[in-house]
Image (cartoon, rainbow, N blue to C red; front, top):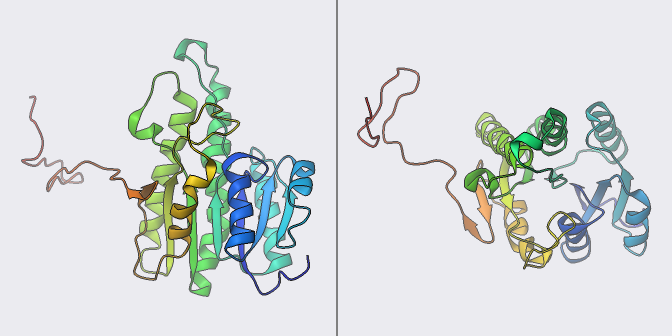
Length: 251
């Protein structure tokens, strides 16, 4: 690609449509990143970004976890350290409990949670070694709201949330910031009736990608707000089996 070697390198998954496509264009054109755009629909990406030299499209099926690992290692070999990652790709499988197949949940977990896990496993330690990294894991309000008929999607995003918070704690002493972003109810292929344009999430993504060394990590951010993931449980001590005054006793 012409003119990309000195740009900030960022991986964006799910880059062929919706929020991912919007973020790729914004980050490459407006914010000066070299975007490694990953998605299954390579033909669409090559057409969409044909005039943008700072976008490198690559085909990737995130349900293939070993293929995902091989792809990201190949990108590191080709482009060097990758300090920025947006785990955006996702699938929205839903339906009533009685109509779901276990494979629906497994597929959702592979794409929405395990693929981001593999990408973080490959990139985050390298970010720590180089002294800088910013990770944005795209999630949803679903694990907080838990709407009916969404077991595969909501459960997989809840797993992603937990992985994000835990990994952020593990790397809290480094200059690697790992956060969650819910883009809001944007109009996409997954949510064709969404009232917002995908560009509405750009300011939040920019904020998380440009956090200073003392910035937050392990947080949940939505349309400019930081959303608490956990209730205030007082001084509860899980390991000791001791509750707190903040809890309501029922026994």
